[in-house]
Amino acid sequence: MSTYGQKSTLGASDLNLHINIEDQVVNFPKYRRELINRLNGKNFKNEVKSHKYEWSTRDNRALQSTLAIDLAADATSMVVTDPGVFNVDDVFQLPGGEQHVVESVAGGISVTFRHIAGTRAAHLAGVTASVIGGATPQGKNADNMVVTAFEDLYNFTSILEDVVDLSGTQHEALIRGEENSAQLIARKQMELTEKLQRQIVLGSRYEDKGRKLTTMGGLKYLIDTYASSNAVDFGGSATWTSDTDVQNKIDDCLDIIAEKAFEKPVMYVTPAFMRKFKYIQDDTTQTSLRESARGTGVVRTYLSHTFGNIDVVQLQGMGTAMNDLIFFVDESMFGYKAHKGRGWFTTPLAKLGDSFRWQVLGEYTVKLDIPQAAVYCHTLGL
Image (cartoon, rainbow, N blue to C red; front, side, top):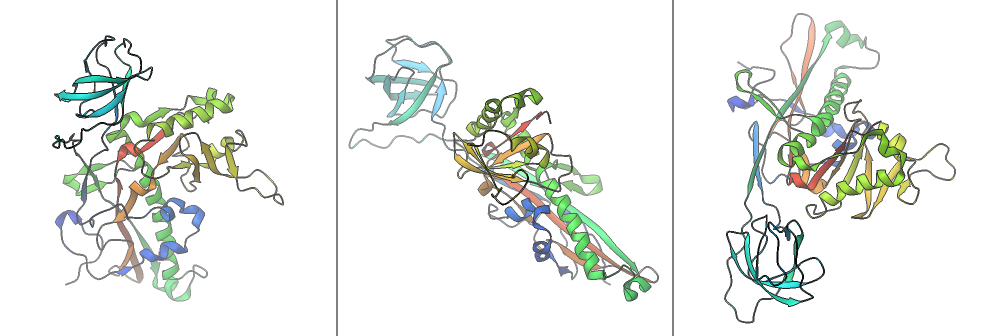
């Protein structure tokens, strides 16, 4: 006996025959699914085969740290605040341009060194020591590597589901105007796709084992959970009084991810933000306005001091939920993917009297490879 309708993936059983309609997403208005159109699952290394998807990330080795204690001008050792930064034969530089070569490292933070260039000076705790190169002697045996720990991350899947229901008369007579069951299914899929787009950005990760319920965490949740310092206060309405202040806030965000991003980040904004953003200095934004057009152009790129021109993507269909947020993310590390065999599909349900019913369902999750490669601004004061 066949069973129709939603079945929990927590039970690890397969679905019955269904009609895959995932490819129909391309037929929806592009401006309503901008994020769905831009993203994909290329950053997923494995198929999603469970309601819980796990991955690991290991950040690139950091190349600078701060002094934990004061340093005398003639010192030959220092203590830094971050382990795993310095290794034997690294060349590092202190403020003023003086350079030294690391001779040994103990416990990851106690560093002995010898001076090689620049005028030596005393330094207070908190100043930065930056690795700028290497000076390994010819023929030297290899040293131990600096180990950067892995961080284990995970997300859940979310099931998005709804039903199309027509009476037998409606189905046969097209009483809904020109919409038959296939068109109503497509409309329902479009509604669910817009809901998915919102969850990709704003969803919260949650599990209720008793109800066999999970929800996926979106971009904001993954930043808050794994890179909480990457949330930047925009400063409210006062920041908008100066173009320079607005630019500084945006560039502050980009500075945070400058050493984490593999590709140029993209800026996600809403129409509420765009209405003000399009008026900042013309030499820092490029709009789509043509000479023959009327009105004010939509900003397409922003000229940053960190990455040069970055794309500005306006997300429609977000309602007011994202009006107090702007995001910056390396899209090569950010994507969404369907649970295996559970991309958008429709299944005919058992009839209830003189009716025709179809379930429209998809199960998806989101992955952000390195959460530190994304940042957002809040308290926009719009």
